[in-house]
Amino acid sequence: MAGGTSDRQRQVATVADPSLPDGRQFAVTWGVPEPFGGMTSALLHRSRAFVRLAGREVDVVTFDPRPDLPAARERLARAGELIPGIRLRNLWEDLRGGPGGTAVATPRDDGASLVEHLRGDGSLAARDERFPAHAAGPSRRITTYDAGGAVLRQWTRAWDCYAEWLDGVVGDERAFAVTDSKTAAEFMARYRRPNVVSLHLVHNSHLVGPDRPWGMLRPSRRRVFAHLERFDGVVFLTERQRADAATLLGDPGNLTVVPNGIDPLDGDPAPDAERDPAAGVVLARLTTRKRVDHAIEVVRRCRDRGVPVTLTVYGDGPDAPALRRRVDDAGLGDAVTFAGHRSGAADAFADASWTLVTSTFEGSPLALAEAMARGCLPIAYDIPYGPADLIADGVDGVLVADGDLDAAADAVARLVALPAPERERMRRAARATAARHDDAHVVEAWGRVQRAAAARHGRTSPPLHVELERLRMRFRRRRLRVSVRLRGVPPGASVTITLRRRGRGALVRERRPARDGRTMWRLGERASRLVGGRHPLTCIVEVEHLGAVVEAGRVTAHPDTRSVPRRAAQRVLGRFGRRRR
Image (cartoon, rainbow, N blue to C red; front, side, top):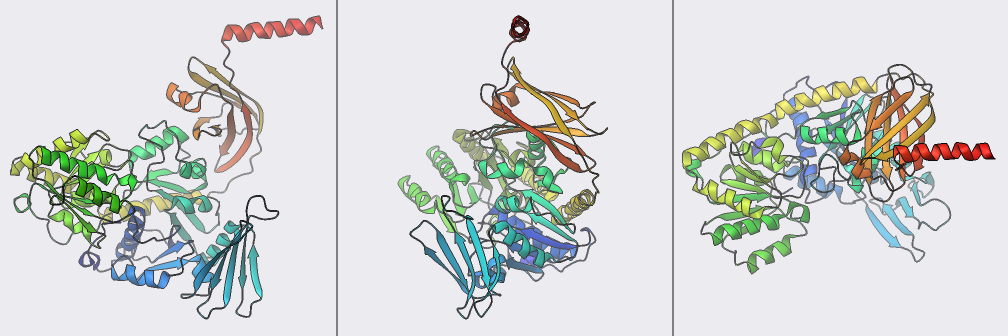
């Protein structure tokens, strides 16, 4: 992330607080890239808050094969991202026997690949072989060796290796695992242990595009979001996203909200009188998703109107060269400055007048809360999710339509021209709004969520045996109707249908109480339009009772699109034909 917090803000005495339940704390992610983005920044921030405010150590567990973890730990500690009480653990480092060593990749002519993980003394610790899809046998094979070269263990599925390693890291103690990475979440959804309470924190929008709540799931989210009930708790950063997920996918009873926390401020930010009203900042990874080019275009339009705004961009990423060229081509070299990636860059909000949030989507942009906490006024696209959950338009910031560059330029120009007392009132309101993200409140909320997840995890589930007798899908008057008849449904059970359209990514889940083994759904027009009525649909039927979930059956078929009179006529003709035979 381009932001982060200063060392002086992190040097706060640890205070033991029983806000978190007893048990070890784990943060699960695929890796800690450098420079890292908002998800990793939020993960490390939450871990520091758990250490500092709740007195709980946190193990950050990763699965990526990077060999330079010792140097990464040193850099992260020097930047204040890793503090005493946070341990960074990695699968491949442990397979190599500890810090040190390296990984050597060797492509092969047959399309397979080989990565050899070597210990610090050069001996072979592990081989990771991947085979092409057309090859006979497993697609992957991981083998570990002792110092003498003898085989210790071998797995033909990576997840089996991950699970065995994680079992050793966790041990037999009660543990709470919060999975931040959507990549790691696919594995953690299947990792079930009696002593591990598993939660998934969703950092970004689960939908493709701005349409909500009925929209296409992102391909990277599809497998996990199709079975959110596999986690003891699923945490969203905003209420709007939680509600949208529940509308699209049904609420299995484990969906909740905890916002990202922000570091406490050391002193008061500058009052309006000490800020240049025309000076803005942007903190973001320089990637296509963040659309920093929109922020640059807003500056150009303001300058063309005679508003002498300036913008400092903190952050780095693959789009940096293109963005610099854009600034040069527009003749904005004196107006836009690239400050690069800096630890503690969020402190720039304390002196700037305004900031822009122009992403295509977010979960809840951490930089937005950090800016408001420092009295920096946000001008944000109304995207899913985050800005509209935090900003009261015209009170503590400005919301504009997604992609509306003229409206964003108008908002900047208005804030620059606003009388100082009115801007100061908005800055105070922004700080009050951001107080909801105070670490103490956020850690307390995590304590409530983890206790509820532990209660759900500890439920004993009776055996459940249900059979699907009949399933019908009909599409009439632009709405899809699904009727199900089941055998063996106990009183008080609920039935969930999952509708999937192959190859398109459409997925809708609906949950209803079961009544005498019969349940009927009539989807709304938007949900029906999403899955469609003229293509084969797969309908999966699941029954839940007292914590036990069983798949009763699945049917793939074209929905019946015949009208009621036509269906009745064909039924009569069919009977008549049978009689004649």
